[in-house]
Length: 125
Image (cartoon, rainbow, N blue to C red; front, side, top):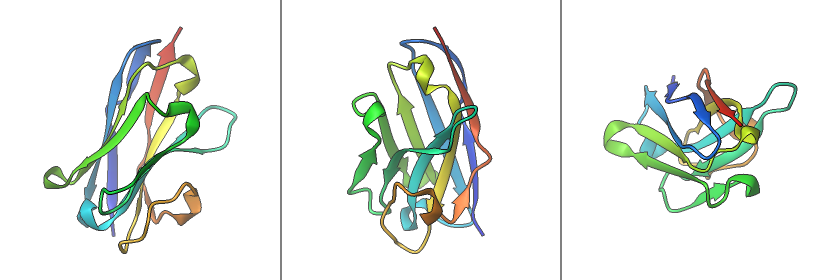
C-alpha cells in the first residue's frame, strides 16, 4: 500500500509562485512514475505533469510548459511541482498520483494506482 500526502498549496497572487510537495510512504518513489493532476470547480480532472520512475523523462500539459517543473528527491521520497508565473486559470485542487511497478509515466489518470488527498491552489487576479 502506498500513501501520498500533498502539501504546499495556498493562496497566491497572479504572477506568483508555489511549490507543491508529494511525500510517499509504503514504497520508494524511485520505483514509481509520478504525476500531478488538477481539478477546477465544475471541470474534469486534468493532467498537469509527470516524471518517470527513472527521472529520465518529464512531460507537461501545454498550458504549463515553461512555467511548471516536476522533480523528485529520492532521498526524501518526495516529488515536487514548482509552479511559477501563476494565473487564475491555475486555480484548482492539485493531486499527486503514483504508478507502481517501474511503469512509464502517463497523462491518463486511469493508469495511476495511488492518489493523494489533494491540495488547494488559489490564484487571485
